[in-house]
Length: 140
Image 1 (cartoon, rainbow, N blue to C red):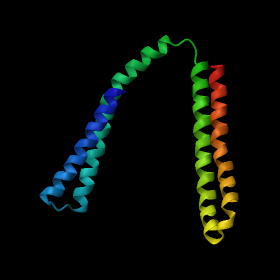
Image 2 (cartoon, one colour):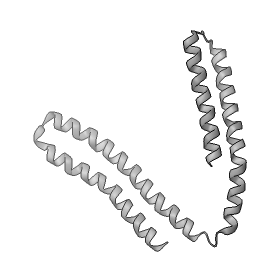
Image 3 (cartoon, one colour):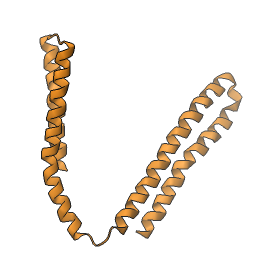
Image 4 (cartoon, one colour):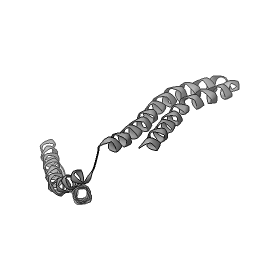
């Protein structure tokens, strides 16, 4: 995994440095030139990813031989999903309730406390997801 991340970072870094050198030299690019550059970047980053993926597959094969069961892995996955999905739900809830609360408070500042309670209820979803993930991790 480290090799893959290093190679991808190297590819992204060279892409950024190429763009900076084009800006400093003042080169004018056409639409077809940009399409070629994007195609070259995508192909090179894909190649770097595949080169880094080969050792990762070998390490994964060794790791699967040493594991006794996948029950603990499923427990970790369930804990991650409960926290992640609860956080996504909280983001949606706070986003909608927060924008409505800002509009309501701008019209009438006396309802600030009520809007904070509604936002707190929306944030409670993330806390419930975290509690569920802690309960799952205690059983793993």
